[in-house]
Structure formats: C-alpha cells, structure tokens
Image (cartoon, rainbow, N blue to C red; front, side, top):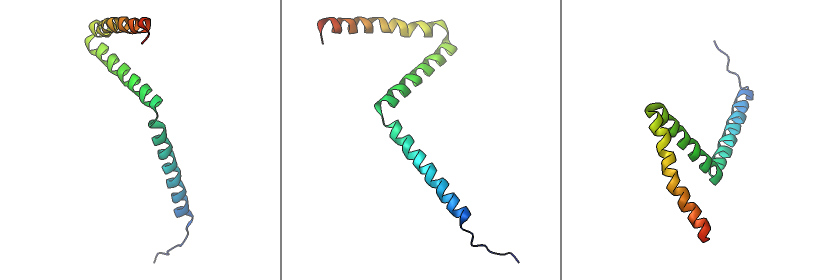
Length: 84
C-alpha cells in the first residue's frame, strides 16, 4: 500500500516558479513593445538577410545594396540642405 502525503512544499515551490516565469514573460513582453527594440530587431534581421544573400550570391549581393544607398543619401543631403 502506498502512503499519500499532504506535503504542500513542492506545490508551493511550483507556484513560485510559475509566478517567476510569468513575471519574466511579462517583463519581456513590455521590453519588446518599445520602439528601440523593434528598430534594433529590424536592423539585425536585415543584416542577417544581407549576410545570407552575400553567402548565397557573393559579390553582387554585397555591391547592390550599396549602389541603392547612393541615391538615397543624395536625397537625404538635398532635404537637409533645403531645410525640410
């Protein structure tokens, strides 16, 4: 015959661990809602995709985004000069 224990220490410990995990999840959710986090995450994803493109296609994947940035920077400099 087996004995049944009414020891509540393991259940309390489990409740405490669950509460800690919930607190950590809520904190992570609050941190991921910030604009700074989203901007950094987007930049990291774009950098990773660019790295994969370089690994797959080589030199053209390295050069084409840089060529696309040239007119963009001209436009930005023009807007700064005009004062907008």
